[in-house]
Image 1 (cartoon, rainbow, N blue to C red):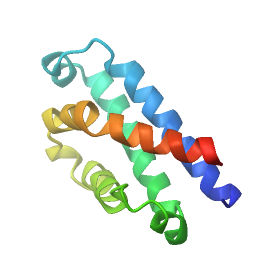
Image 2 (tube, one colour):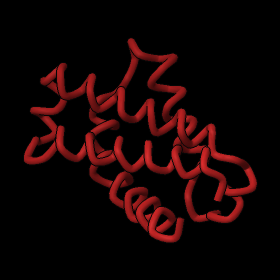
Image 3 (cartoon, one colour):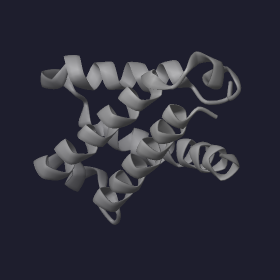
Image 4 (cartoon, helix red, strand yellow):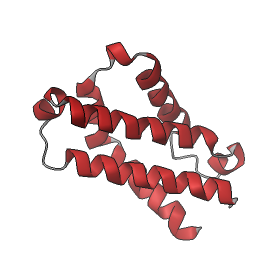
Length: 112
């Protein structure tokens, strides 16, 4: 694995840990009402999306179970539609999709 790709995976892992720390014990309603937690979470998702976009296509191809395009597109929505972000969907992404991504990234890093 190229060093640049490893660094990107590390950025993703760090961002996931940050998000987990922000939302630990937080209900969906509290998340939606708390602008500080929302903003911090969205920022970390932006970092994940940027890192995903920077990982080489060759390496992405080695891990076809990771929905690379979906994560990059999620970042694009957060960046470009910031007035229309659905924070309930962001929370659901944290709860439903982030744990899978975390496992996948941890597995990749364990082999790096």
